[in-house]
Image (cartoon, rainbow, N blue to C red; front, side, top):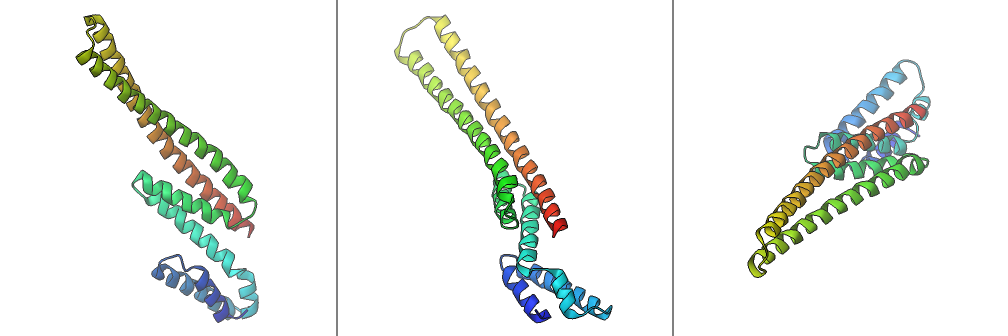
Length: 193
C-alpha cells in the first residue's frame, strides 16, 4: 500500500469525525511517514508498521467518543456519549463482546431496574396523595386517621425524592465508571496492536 492509498483509506474510515480533526490526523500521519522515510526506512515498511487504517480509524473514533462523553455536562448527553463509545469499542476487538458488552449490559439492567423502582415509588406517592385528598373531602374520618395519612404521604414523597436522587447519582457513577473502563480497554487494545 502506498502513502496516498493509506491516507485515502484512513480518511474514508474517519468519516464520522469532524473535518478539522480528520485533517489534523491525516497531517500527523503524513508527517510521521515523511519523518520515518527521511530517517532511512522505506515507505512500504513504514505503512506496514502503521497497521490497518480501518483499525486505526476505529481506535481514534472510539477515543474521540469517550472524550466527548467525558466532557458532556448533562447526564443525558453523558449517557448518549457512553452508549456510542461502547459501540465504538465493540468494533475494535471481538473479545470486547465478553469483556465490555457483558458487564455493561448487566450493570445497565440494574440501573434501569433502579429507575423503574424509583418511578414506581413516584406513582405510589401520587396515588397516596390522591387517596389522602379523596379521604379528606369525601370520607368523614377522625382527626388521627387524617393525621396519619398526611404523614404517610410525606414519608412516601420523601422516599420518592431520595430514591430519584440516589438513582441520579448511581447513574452518574455508572456512566463515569463505564467511561473509565472503556478508556482502559482502549489503551489495552492500542498497546496490544
